[in-house]
Length: 228
Image (cartoon, rainbow, N blue to C red):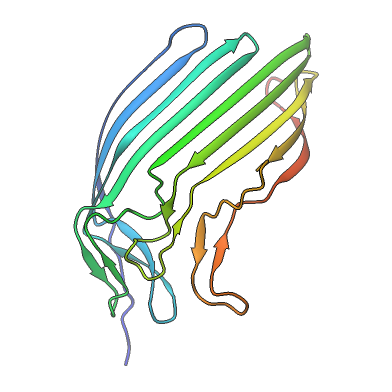
């Protein structure tokens, strides 16, 4: 008996957005945006209960609304700080079923997968000219996100992954107006920072988390062709 392949439709979105942006002077800037997105036929990834095969299906309706803001403030001529924050409420607004068994059941109010409710960032940049063609620069940044679902919460393969904080830093010198040498360290605190998960049993495990690259140190040599 032949089984037809499942197909999915394009999604449709109606986006409403309002915001402000401006400056307090002296190199500062700010933005604030409120938005609402109403979705029809949102595309959602899932797995079959038999065999754990990936597939894409359509929900009925969904909604995402929230706020995004960013602020850049110079602390001195050589130092500036940039702060960012977002809050997102992304949910199904009606239920649906998909697959044969069915493999996926969506319930109104389910959080959409891959979306953290809150995210925040902070970055500090420092620059100090040594001469007409030499300068020292340094950068430190942090990014945080709260927990998020890998699939719809009602999916049997769904996992609620914890939030995480990632810290990165780099410092170096620029010379001859084109060359830069940087030392860097990414993921300073060596967080696992899982971004997805497989719950299908493997040869030596029942679950596999896909994590961020571990603490990484290195050197970079860069050349800019701009204006040369």
